[in-house]
Length: 583
Image (cartoon, rainbow, N blue to C red; front, side, top):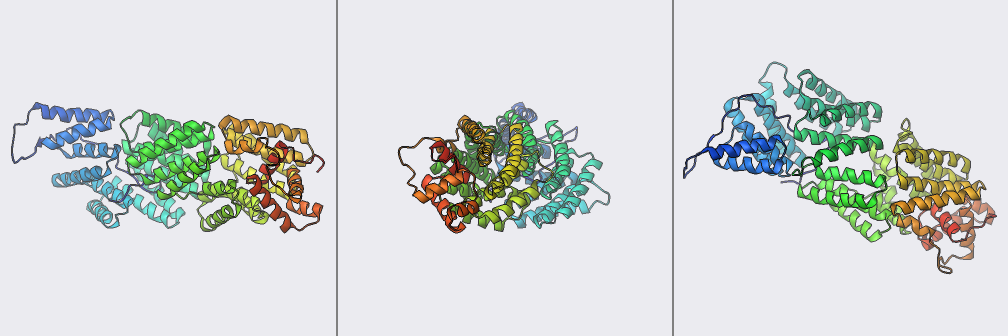
């Protein structure tokens, strides 16, 4: 069986709420080669299994219902309960097997609507696993059951969801959005909360990816309200939680992602026996904790996320968790651990970029970093993924002396952030724009961009990002001749790095032993001018050399000082009394 991927929009819906008739069929004795008398104890096991299911004690429910299934011929409704419990404890193979049995039992009893539900979700699950032929067969069975009905029905709305995913996979987002709206209307028309939430959050995700962020967030919030109000079936609740948070990340809406992650964490903690969704939940939690500067807790959450994801054969979530580990190790100044984590992320199918390129930059391997980020930006067209890559690309290309390319990418990042100025994406765009303007020698305009970015990061309670921004502000102040303000900003940046344990950044502030840098006299001249905020063009004019020669000297300085940016060079110069106050 193919490994399970993490459910996320637009990738998979799940079984609708298990709505059972008031008078359920009674379980009957399973024929045995060696028969024995079935007593009250057998019915008691079944009743206790149903009770455990009702209170979401998934492992206990699975154990009891499976035990009853060994002695009794479970009715279809109980088979669906057994299937759901298996899913929630990460046993998707059992989930499919039980759901197939429920389909056959419903078909034998002539329950067309219930048979559709089982066949449909078997097909969707198989499609998610990549079993295209069997998936098509089961979805064909579901479609045939609907085609036998002349009247409109809610099942027709569910059948629209695979169509949505097909259009979205081909890049036809507008068409996918229209079809999702029809599915959502069907859910509303028939009062099906699961379909309404599934179609709504998928439509919201598509809108966000299409750049219609505010419209998309409105639908995502509506779907999440249904999840938090316990209006949805268990599996759909988990799907909506994870899908909405992923879409909020796509929109770089940190506030929403933080709020909904807290709700998701509480929901998971209420179900201690649950395995499904917990890996992805811990990844989201690690991301929030990293932003808030709680790096030790974030690392612990990421490690737990890897374990939980692998227990559920959830390759996608395991890859994301390993990538998060890599990011935390990189920022904490442990390149070996970061490299190993990025490699594990790659093994689980997660592209280890841009983190790996930033690690190479920090190691002084600027050409390798620029090659990696150049390759990735050239092959990536998806809006959300480009928004993730561009801030790192600007930083790396500025370090490589590729000012024109960095300027163009910073402009693209501005376009992506338009209308989202008070979000993390807006702050990242402001930082990139400020860094480019510093390189261009436009320190006053850079300072305005950076002050605004600092304000947003402070509102988002993101101490590391605040420190990074203030380090750039220090450089701008010094370039404008205000050395005292520059020193204060640099001190504040160092304190910010210390508060989160950013050892890689703090290393630039340590005082060296005599002559640790190994710079040539000409490289020292270039270093002093870089520290003064001069661009390559200005340095070339001051030293009467070519810009190409200046770029080569800057690269040599990066390698010798083991830094990855002009800001880091300036910080090193001032921390080690190498700067020229008259430059």
